[in-house]
Image 1 (cartoon, rainbow, N blue to C red):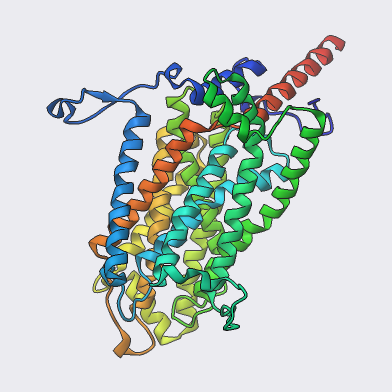
Image 2 (cartoon, rainbow, N blue to C red; image 1 turned 90 degrees about the vertical axis):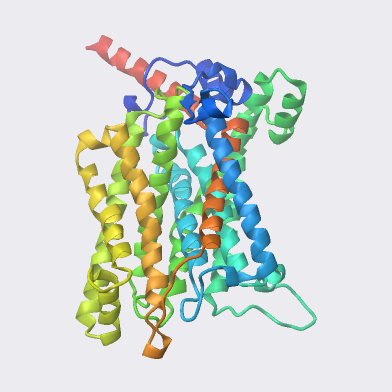
Length: 487
């Protein structure tokens, strides 16, 4: 495609080194078609000699095995849960929402960066999205899959989950549309559907590239079917671009609506600590905050293992770190306002909850609140300095701290608020059980398993968009050369 001179100039730091269009096919396509060409450094396995399995393992196999092991833990916990009921969790009276809703909100938040990177940055014509949008879109789908497990099981009767949908039936019964649970069903299912369609449409040209480069007959057939007869004609490209823009336009409101609706699960309640109007924007900012942290957490090791440093450059990581810093400040402001509301309202129950969260001496949950402030409020402030944004180790540790901190945020908001209800007779204490942790780590295993299967089966970077970037940079270099010669 020709370089559009009306667009903003291309940042040369988005693609380092000298590349041709064929290089993009080879660098990204061979990760799928010929993984042996990517000699990623093996990771030493502690105690491997004693087990007789050798000293090293490739990063893909090691993390995939770890994820698959945790996935089996999820299967076991689901079997026990369905056999014995949700009594195996730490939920009690008054804490009816425990790890299940904490982890549901946490996973939904992680899925937000994909839609933001893919849809909003596409509409804004931001070229720095090209190297990371495919990975972020995959994370969105897999994170929403992990999130969807929890509310389904939290109802206690997942086999009648279809009652939450407005389907015609002889009893003429409809869902309770005033229930936040029903809002979540519509919001999350819509988000999931649009994300999958957007992801698949973006993959069609790359499926055709893999089809044409594959040497194995079955591989050619599989990618040929997935490419849906793509020939790269002008009509195909026109329809592809129209579909992409329409889906981006549909996806953009979802960034705001999905986590806003999730925040209404709490803001619509009369529980102290929940019914505050700041929750919708604060939850949306927190979701983008957590989502970009997870993208950075995956991008840093992947670019090293597969030699993608020229495609996922420090410029990409720097801009993601800036977005993480900006959304982190919004989240930190939300924490401050929560404390201010509780103090300024002069409502005894609100102040009692504040004391229960923050008092280091005598409050059983204060450790969670102050760890939240440390991980989400203080540690991300190091990103103000460019030196730290250019340090891979610093970015990695900050991203991991944000992921941990966002989980603590949900822990502070949900069970801690429920332990102190309106009546002293309804006061309680919450502590998770082994099966709470088993299911949580099991969903992490599901996420890792799906992500690393994705790395092996589909191109982790959008080949077509990187080719377009190479073409535009070549045109820009040609224009610069002509301008220099004219002077």
